[in-house]
Length: 160
Image 1 (cartoon, one colour):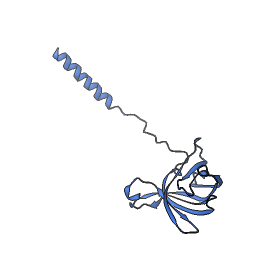
Image 2 (tube, helix red, strand yellow):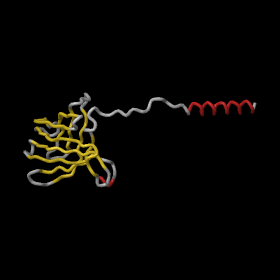
Image 3 (spheres, helix red, strand yellow):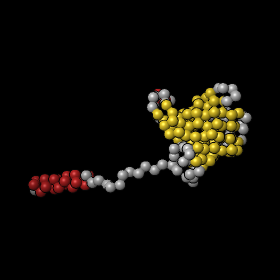
Image 4 (tube, one colour):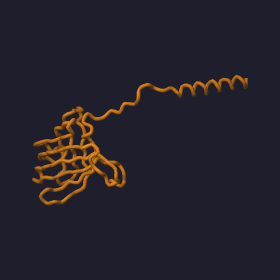
């Protein structure tokens, strides 16, 4: 009986060993948003053009619920002049803009112009490359124009 159990154990180990070595022909396919590389989480410097003062903040760009390739959301989470507005984008040119875009966060409207993303266009404080973002933003709440420049968040402590 001991020999029988021993043979069954060896057979089970052989089956597990052979089945675990199975490889699949298809490689994993990474799915991206239809507006990639425009979407992301950005570490940005927001400068009041008239006053010359700068506030550092995190801003977000992301796709719409219907996965449109021509529209995206911009969310600037700053209490005085923040916004959450829908903009028009061109993925191939890596540009975005919006005139009279409704601010769904605080009310009013926004104008966003000269918006662009450059892949590997920024040098981060940690010494590496990251995508850069740049835009001119006008808020009807403050009646001011802001210049926003930043880079995609890397997650490195040196970049925070």
